[in-house]
Amino acid sequence: QKEVEQDPGPLSVPEGAIVSLNCTYSNSAFQYFMWYRQYSRKGPELLMYTYSSGNKEDGRFTAQVDKSSKYISLFIRDSQPSDSATYLCAITYGGSQGNLIFGKGTKLSVKP
Amino acid sequence: EAGVTQSPTHLIKTRGQQATLRCSPISGHTSVYWYQQALGLGLQFLLWYDEGEERNRGNFPPRFSGRQFPNYSSELNVNALELEDSALYLCATVPWRGLREQYFGPGTRLTVT
Image 1 (spheres, rainbow over the protein chains, first blue to last red):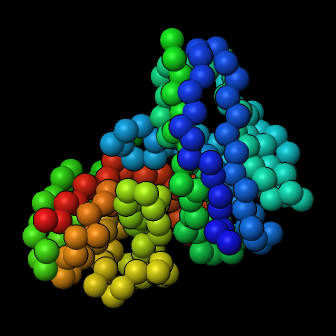
Image 2 (cartoon, chains in turn red, orange):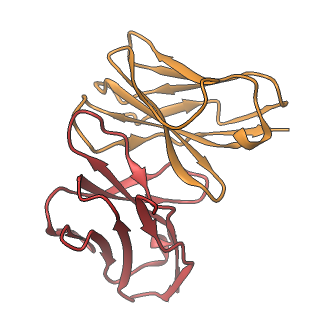
């Protein structure tokens, strides 16, 4: 079983739609959860970072963590064409070692 | 504030050659992670350097190596290049060991022919 599973999509939505992106993970020892956005041929950009279960909101973005289900989500409200990118979930353990374990990414296209 | 920089942007090598990739962290960041993003495989952890030492290595052969310099910049070396080493190589930095938010550079695209 892979450590992190993410539906690769592609996902196509109309402008203004609410987008839901999801990942599941296998090991309950994971403690930190992140979402990155990657535009074509660019490096990933950190969008959201959460530690505990629950919701974290930043503008149009909401990250949700459910540790009991080992399930993390990213919601994008009022999606814009500029949100078209690949979204990567990333998780890591506690302790001193901080290397991230990434999902394969979901490619999102927001149509005007 | 300048972000993470990587050089070169593109690198084309022949199978069997060696490649050297460089990463300069955000000012004040002391920890450097290297990742490989190959088509269809996603981002995979390669190496972690902190305070000049290799702290952890991913599931990659020893021909992937590197170092970190006193100014915290880092170098990734790939020896005996194979075709499957063709990928985007990304470095990410954090201000200090223990923090989890990693900030990525734009990457070096390595093509092995």
